[in-house]
Length: 516
Image 1 (cartoon, rainbow, N blue to C red):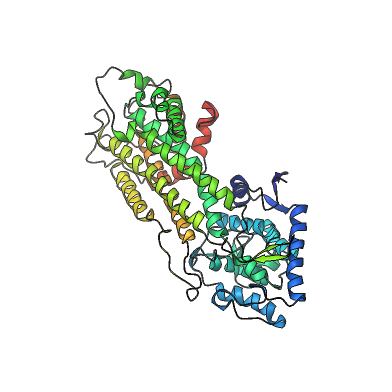
Image 2: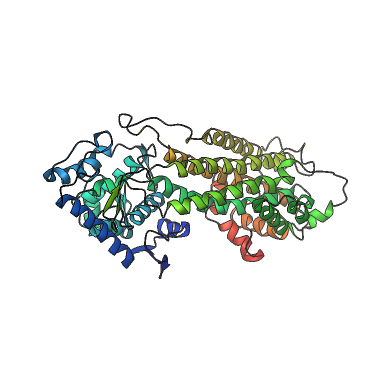
């Protein structure tokens, strides 16, 4: 069965969710339903748990303690209290909560893994979580506290608290006690049964939810970065020769080929380019002519990360896992976040490079020693006006911050649970860092686009490239030319939002066709 969409509804079966589905639910409030197959699978998994209790078998997570207490046998009369205590004791997250779209992504992915039938929970539990998602009950989930194995225990515990009327949740933009929030939405709280508390918190859905949103936005950034680079290169009277298709076919990395093609498309029909074709200038700086090589390598990274994340969002990462066909329980390590930890560190590095090269192009526009045809700091009456001088400072600050954030989290491991859990992934830290790096990159690109628009104003007697012209006009619809110093904070923030939401990309693609 495949994931289907019917009038803004996603039907899930634990196998077919895509990153676009995650984005549509997280950011566009698509409704979610369970497939008939998923409902049947959940029921079969629950029957296996019931049989264990009936036969008085000892199974980890069903009638034992957890982690270092795995050898402690729990009596039948204490099993429900055990599951509740698990959520209470594991809700130790700290610091600011995840934003709403991240929480919604986490909820969706947790539902998707429970829909597999390999977790041993009731349909009623999954439906309660699904109702919370569809009715806008968003648990308060602190960002910090997960080491990424056994999954995202602490943050997922905060999510699960609301199902039992504990914790806190946002409902209609108000932060309320969990019980009040869920009841205001017309949803009944539930009492956990055997295995259910563990099934709610054992998994990689927090790091993977963040990862899915970062990958989606990173794809937008890669294309938008090409557009903005094309604007800058045109404004700096750069050459389009380094983007010749023949050159890149001799080093046929997919990302590099696509980036070069985008630059050719964006800069096509540029009168600025024609005006200096025989100027005698031999080569442009690396930050201009090596754009396809740098952007392309980051693009290839995004493609790789996307494949890993799309596997993970349809993976079952609980423990132990139930196999209804054979009534088997198998304890393993699918909750370990290493696959996501490594690729999110990798993605953080790749995104940082987009900002690194962007900041260097900004410097070339504001530094009149590097762009003799443009006024110092892109403003007339320099001296009394500082123009765009400090925008480069901000870009430099963000790039430097990214260098710190790009240090990999996945190379660290601190044993937990009395050394029972002696290697952990730190995957949620890696994902959170990538999310912050992404935001910083978008700010740097916003600054580059702001500067490029100003630089192009000084060349207004010449038509820029087709895509450059579209992007320039879009900026000028929102942000005025800088004649004299003004506060630029709002201009940068406005362009950053346009970049992250895909508005710049959509505007250019509407005229030029889909970019690579």
